[in-house]
Image: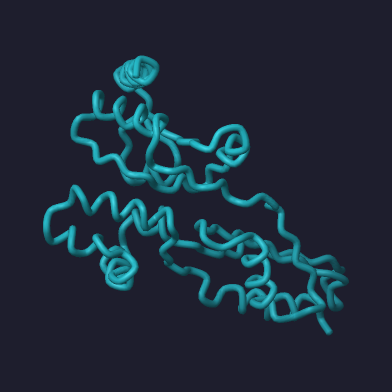
Amino acid sequence: GNPLTALLKSGARLGRGSRKAALCKSSEALLLELAQHAPLPQRLLVAHPRLTFPLIRLLWRKRAVLNQFFLSERTLTGLSSVGNGVSQPESAALSFRQTTIPGKKLPVWKHLIREKVGNEDLKVECDVELEHSARSRTGGEAWDALETAIEILFDRAVIAPCLSPYITDGRFYTSLRGNVYRFSPFLVNGAEALAGECTITDGALQTAVQFFRQMLSV
């Protein structure tokens, strides 16, 4: 059959149910820690996240926090074909991007995508072959040193473990040491946090220098 037609049908299948919110162990740890510091109404919402997550998903559906820590999404990014434009194309290719949250291994995601494609004759290639890094425990000397330095410099901050979306270098250090934490001593808004960037000013740099001094001292 026409390879472009077959690919368009598979692209339509890939587009169905492309956004899914789920709770992984890292996000559950985040909510449990936040529950200890939240006012009573919010505390009731997040104190038992596995029970209340359907309600959390509904209430936070338009908030950046849902996209950042709980949402996996598949986006179709391109379609191309090789041919003369008159007869059916010789070949066609479709590209897509799959963002994930920890909890499912890479082979599981590949299997789900293969099922979504729904055509065994189509070849599926995955550019990213690395798993997410292991979760580091929230305790021990390393965590305590980080927590103390944050408390000294950001006295009103709630310190909670969370995911670092699209940041993957932690996996290369876990074999050397079990406790790997990523922390940037900068204040950012929701949009900057999602984009993984922030506005750096002289004051922000001075705060960062002071933080690392505190970190080394504790």
